[in-house]
Length: 325
Ligand code: A2P
Image (cartoon, rainbow, N blue to C red):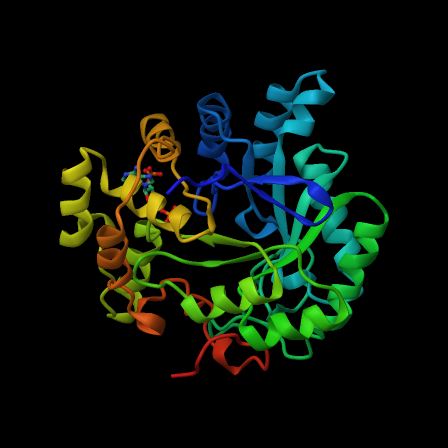
């Protein structure tokens, strides 16, 4: 099965299906990582204000662009409105800050990062109460925030707008006002989100998979906190045996699987070797029986890694997108 290298977005722009993720890449390591990614051929670079690494990414991007406007056009740069910006008053300020941090004149895609909001505390993107819980803004009005993103798109400073971490009901709500041009959600073999992906497909919304390799470092932090077990996706016997059969790595099998499922993926790595490995999946093809074996690894909601439990109290927010346990 051949997989096109791009997804065509509304208006005809092309988003590379394999992008470079930077969640959990610190300001000090991400500049070199993005440079290595650009050298390896990635052109879709994903970040977020909440990752607090936009400035370093901007340095790497601008060094690569130099004075060549055609190089900027080749890139597909994505960043996200942080939860503290989920109110009409603050969208423009956070958008302008991201643009300035990245040192760009326009963005290719701007996403609402989460459906829930935090209180706005200047200089603190993750404000906490003295008891350690997050300072949530329980009055988040997603449609009002969406209208602000639409205005930014109309101003010409972003080519596309979309949403992240939303559920089916929320996506349908957005669509009534203006169809999101992209949906970014966690997808990997144990958390395949088949119903949500099918709904996005029905609505004609392209889907990008974050945590495609299972975000091992984050999963370990959560396991230590919650006592839950998170399987190491790279070590799953089914994945390893398919990798052995193709003389490829487990990571390449996990990524190729997602591409053949029809979604885009944004693996993160700070190792130049693994960065190259992750984009070298175009000459690999999984058979129908291998696809079926990987499909069977889905654990539904139990497979979710990024359930936002690292934001204590999040399930009390009216827009919390997942099933409450
Ligand atoms: P590192 O940055 O040291 O390469 P995800 O993209 O699902 O968030 O997963 C990212 C995690 O997977 C990081 O811990 C990253 O570590 C690791 N990783 C990325 N690429 C590979 C690979 N090809 N093989 C093994 N681990 C990888």
